[in-house]
Image 1: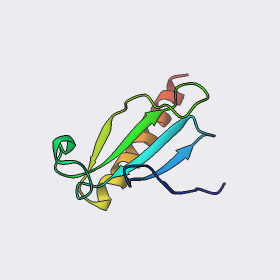
Image 2: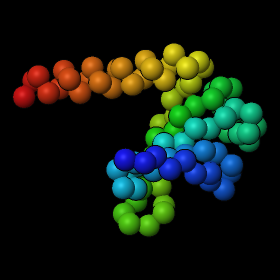
Image 3: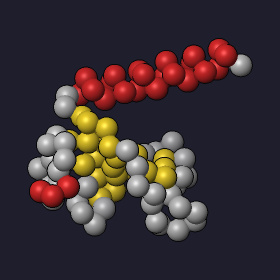
Image 4: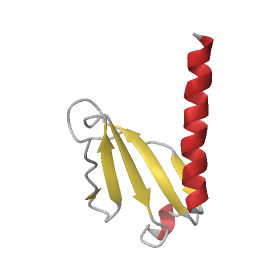
Amino acid sequence: MTTKIEEDRAGQLYVDIYNKYYRLTYVSKDTRHEDANWAGKDVIRIQAYKGKGDSLHPGPEILIDTEKDIYELISSLCHLIDAARKQD
């Protein structure tokens, strides 16, 4: 699988995953509009596409203060999936 990093109209880097079902966007605090910079930090935004077009549902923004935050997010997702599968 090749991950293609692209840039949106606002200049934020993103990647589409699962054949354009989801989009992960890295939103930098430095390039974000002042009125939308609620966190004052970089965030990862997770959005789902609406049907087959390019429209996106609004999605959560996860604060990213350090690289460790990314690893903790990934680790937490793995633990959550593992626990859910053990229930089956």
